[in-house]
Amino acid sequence: AYMHPYTVAKMVTSLGHLYRRRIYLNMVAGGFKNDLVALNDTTPHDKRYERLVEYTTIIRRLLEGASAVTCRGEFYTVDKLRLTPPLAADLFPGIFVSGSSDAGVAAAKAIGATAIRYPKPAKEYQGEPAVHAGESGIRVGIIAREREEDAWRVAHARFPEDRGGQLTHQLAMKTSDSVWHRQLAALGEARGPYWLVPFQNYKTMCPYLVGSYEQLAAELAGYLAAGYRTFILDVPPDREELGHVGMAFARALEVTRCQSYSKSG
Image 1: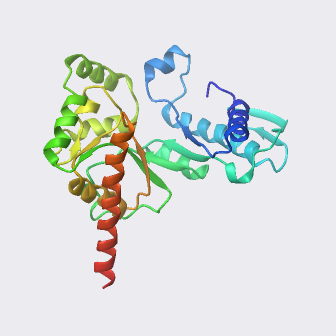
Image 2: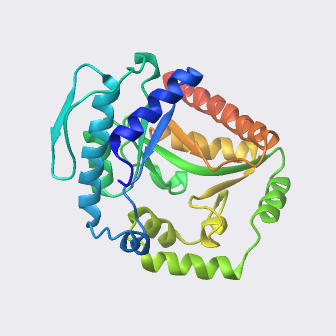
């Protein structure tokens, strides 16, 4: 909320004209209370998502460019605001909303965005109603190798346990009103490929999946079966690592096709 929505829309059109590529916007309401207090932002949790809806709605309407935008909301007011030059329709950005709370999910629906969640182990979705494809996605890190032991060796080398990081994580827990932060912390250490050590040591803000291609294929297939179609990856360190991730997803799609064939046959 600290950059005017017109500025965001103008940046999107500039990038579109420069690179002729579609981008994605990740809309966040803010979850760390200390940061918000430092900015003199005392807006309550759910109200921040209402503000985000107004903010993103103005951006969307500017980028759609059908007419001048007038909006008199609780948080933002614009009067006959127009964006020039207009953005090509095929470059209209995808929009994500980061949030697992009811307010976050409602905000995503209100602005036609994909709600990004921080997933539980895939087996915990069994028996739950599947999400509608496109409505929700997950953020996760992946370390995959042909052999499980090789994947874990890479994982432990990349994310060694760190007492300082653990203390920072505990402090962050006390100063955050983020629902997903509390949900992940409550899960504890799961068995299998689902790994929270990087999160618990404040090295990243999402769970990791670690194991062989086959193990991770089964885990990813579980998320696909639950209805998730958007996966935002914790940034791989290099192209080689991205190749291993691609292999895990390729095998997950094979598993999903086999499951579909088995059910239909």
